[in-house]
Image (cartoon, rainbow, N blue to C red; front, top):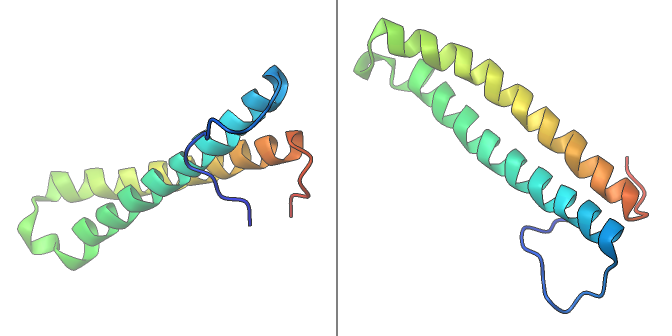
Length: 90
């Protein structure tokens, strides 16, 4: 698995490879942040629901769907970057 969260200075890349590398980095961060937010929304909705009002729980339900979709978009961006760098994408 190719995971990269920061751009290192020792890599020699041209402009196009650098753009695809930024796609991989951005996709990885989008996946991590949306996963954490989705888990927090699920906890807010189901585990700790007695601490939150009904409008807050409804917002968390909607946010769960939105951030799960953002996770998928981050995965697609990551796959585009990996394909551009010549890696085999499953």
